[in-house]
Image 1: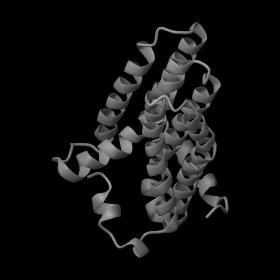
Image 2: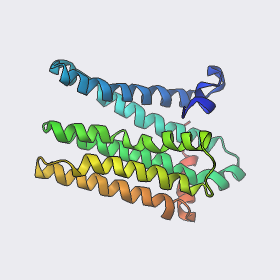
Image 3: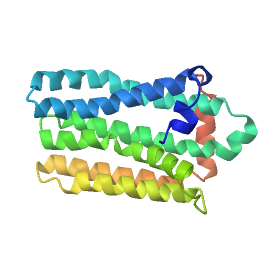
Length: 214
């Protein structure tokens, strides 16, 4: 539902390769998040460890694809469009940062299965905004302000992350890491309202746009 109107319903050749790369990497990551706990449930621990090694490359591919897609879209904008919409690339910055942070913590606490699993599930938290936001925009009555979409999607993401973080009762070190992750998540979400509208953020995006990546 979220990606049908602007991606799945369009001819394959009409869409740039960076979007395809991002879509494939994101889909494979979600498959991995389902396959790893399924392997543990089936007591196929060797398969779980193999998928863990696969995740190194897949996580890098997903994060890299996100950066490349954001850059490609910025580089494709004319000056007027960039001035009006460039600030919006705070959202892929937020999503990539949270994804990487959750994954790194997941690797760090891989010897603590319950904490490791929660951090791996937290890698999906940044997907709440692009999925739920699109569903709301395409299928529900429009909200009075575009900023309200993130008020809703971030609230949902915060509740999901909060449930994963604050129901953990294991290692003290892992608990502190989970709380730290949650604090960064909330701060970056607030940055959408406090940082993204500022001129200095648009200048930072302009600098990123000027890097010859795509």
